[in-house]
Image (cartoon, rainbow, N blue to C red):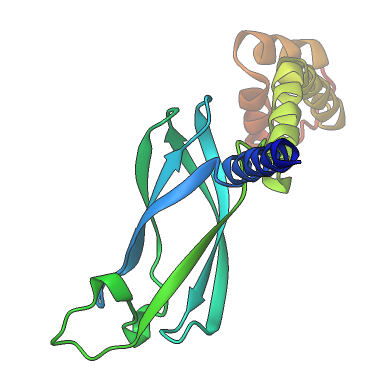
Length: 209
């Protein structure tokens, strides 16, 4: 009977140690916040055999009578090698009211003090894939439209240039001038120059040769 009780106690102790190890895979080994600090300093130790890349934990705040007064959850990107400890900063608790961690209290400063309790929520969680923003989508569409427009620009310019010759021929015909002559002027000079000259010269009362 005695051996059975000892075996059960050993089994219970092993289970308790295992549960504690799982709970404290990333444990808090130190906490600091002085009365005028903008950030609290938290030291985390990696008790696992893998590298830690991020950690989520909850800090519960208590007054000096042990009454819970607040809690906050944090998710921090942090690199901790197995068995190593690293310090990180989180926003100070009640900074505007100058709260201070009870272990960092100074005798000559009569400001409220608090205690903390750390609880691990998770670690090495995968980051969600970032979604494309509307700005990125719009930028992509604009670039695609610009590329297509630039590819057809030479054709548009060529069509406009040829169209000017039709304008020259039509103006020469309406002003009773030689269409062939003005097309030659437009070809060796420019269609715009030929149009400009005809606008100045006006109509021709005689029939073209």
